[in-house]
Image (cartoon, one colour):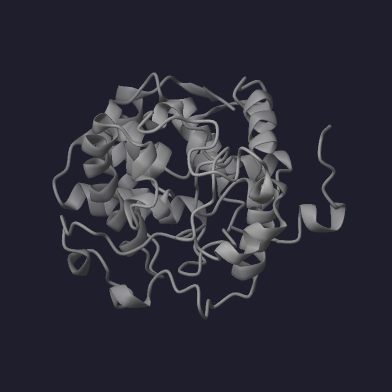
Length: 293
């Protein structure tokens, strides 16, 4: 039976962009990327600037069940909602500001350009620059009337026990899977070291953009897209028991990517007029003229 969500709780927030954190392996050095403030000032969930951050995670942890995720995958991974050019999609995305993110109030394209420009400045491959530009494109889900708690925020496996390393773990107590006979166990519906390709993650923009881009970018870029919000693993190693050796190798790329996502945030918007020719050429090299959403 499909779970009914209180309409008052379905869309309590008005805007969007999240999380990101300290990196366990410091390549590159986060201090070389952070320009707006000290690295320890980022990802502050104890006293976030906006009160909506804590409320966001209360709803996210209450409603992200295994059943809910399966329903959303079936609904959205058909990509039959809308078709747009890449640049129209960015304008569509620019209507959002992310309530789960305590670190920025910039519109989405500005944050994406800050991320991709920081990657480009350090001389990384162009496919990684493109991953930086597109890593939050999946947030367009909010513009299809999805509540933010079903689009952004830290991601985590569903169908097995929720880790205490996830931000605000106390809120999982209201989730029906928390006391489920199978889903509450360490491995749940999975087997030891099954590999993340066999693990269902909480629903949100990471999984959505990964599926959108999976035929266009190399595997390291796809790992960056799919797991950049999986902080309980790439920061805390909370789900090592589900990962295989290939995941562990690929997560070197996720850890390389994440400081750019977090520490490039600053209040100064990039000069889109000057940057546009470079990014138009880059997008045309890897992607079709239009994207399906």
